[in-house]
Image 1 (cartoon, rainbow, N blue to C red):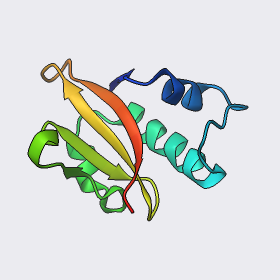
Image 2: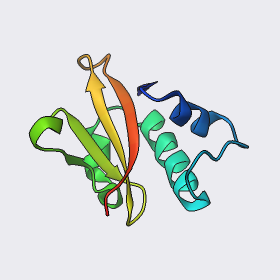
Image 3: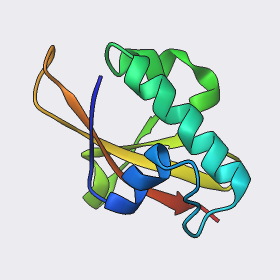
Length: 98
């Protein structure tokens, strides 16, 4: 799946092994693991099948976005651009849900 970042810091977090930003090692490890899964996926149905992702559509003003669990506290917020088979996933943020 094609990926685009809204935040250049998140892009750097995925590609630069020495960059930590403001996140803990556990969050960084989970983020990089999720990004590998996202890049390997053919479409979003893959995320719904992986129960540990807790892939959910958001509501209200964020109804165009989805979240997936990184750990008990943090979620990866994503959205989609385009239509299948040329759909792009947009990585928006890592958010604390507590």
